[in-house]
View 1 (cartoon, rainbow, N blue to C red):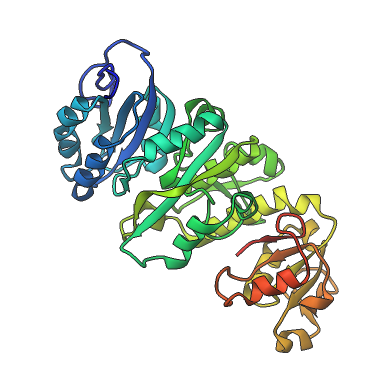
View 2 (view 1 turned 180 degrees about the vertical axis):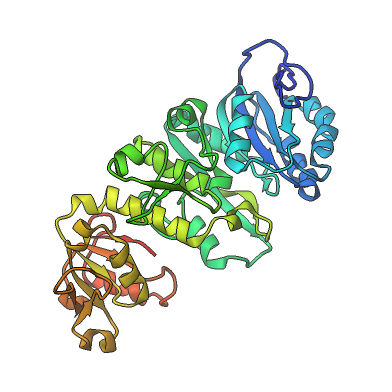
Amino acid sequence: MEPPKRLRTAAGDAETPSGERGEAGSAVDVSVVMPVYNASCWLDECLQAISEQDFTGSMELSVYDDASTDDSRIVVEGWRERLEARGISVLISGHSSAQPRGVGYAKNKAISQSCGKYLCFQDADDVMLHQRVRLQYEVSVLHPNSLIGCRVQRLPEGSTERYTRWINTISQDQLVTQVFTSHGPTVVMPTWFCSKNWFLKVGPFDEGGKVRFHTRTGLLSDSKSAAVLHPQLRPLLPLPQGVPEDLLFFYQSLRRGGGLSRVDQCLLVYRYHEKAATHSVTEETIWKLRVDYLQERVLSQWESFTIWNAGKQGRKLYRCLSWANQKKVKAFCDVDYNKIQKGFYTYEESKEIPKPKVPILHYRAASAPFIICVKLDMTGGVLEQNLNSLQLKEGTDYYHFN
């Protein structure tokens, strides 16, 4: 049987709380953190799964409603009695402004009202399997300064097939080495579990308007990393698109020395649909953040390197590098003889005279280290065979960027 748990309801949040807190500051083991925005059609399945967790410690559900215009709040309130009967206390607050304030804001509010020693992040449109909290809690206790993830089942089945395979199959080492790819965080946000102490050391989530473009270089900086990345960048303009609060937090966690781990079991049904907040963030925004982080963490440590791909993606990366890092590019390499026969790539947009010319070599004639700008899982294993033939080690001799 589960041990008895203290039941608590929402704090006196000025923004429209639901209920009053019991003993102030009474801690629980795990807070399930759930931002909600127009999610009523998924909430019953999501909340049912939370109620069926086999975790035997104390739990609470902390919900923040980001100005939903449907009946999301009513649906969550309708589950209060059933959740509390299972020993899961419920905190619900939110606001009713004309516009939502964003995923980062809603997560921060849900966390600020919570009392859990550990945080289990749950999207309102996803479904956790019954052992999720227990298994991730066990790992997080052993690794309190890490983000803990898990394997997922994508719904609808077959959607984002390559991405899902990548989430579920990259190795523990690759959780660290593949943080620069276009897939984003190697431990994907809907699966995150961490200690609250670690969140408070790294966070909070960016709430929008704190990420800026530098007008001259096109590079990005944010409120927490600007001093580290670009202390000289001025002027700065507001970022008009959605803010990838998960990627910003993920990179900041790594800067602080945080670890990454994954429970190698499927613990979450991860839903794909057109209304997902992910779609509000442009590919260009993600690209600029990735280039910035690659330059900060890898290229700053290398005296020279080769870009693997003389095509569109490799050339784009070269053009987006700082002037100092462009000078470190000793060559492009490729397997396409048509590109190799051109002999070199001329950076026509450069204001330098003469314009920079970078040699294009066959990959066997090139030398490490490499930045790989070839899409993962798209060459039928040929890229991996070529890398293995050179006896290269990922994370030392090369990093994947695409």
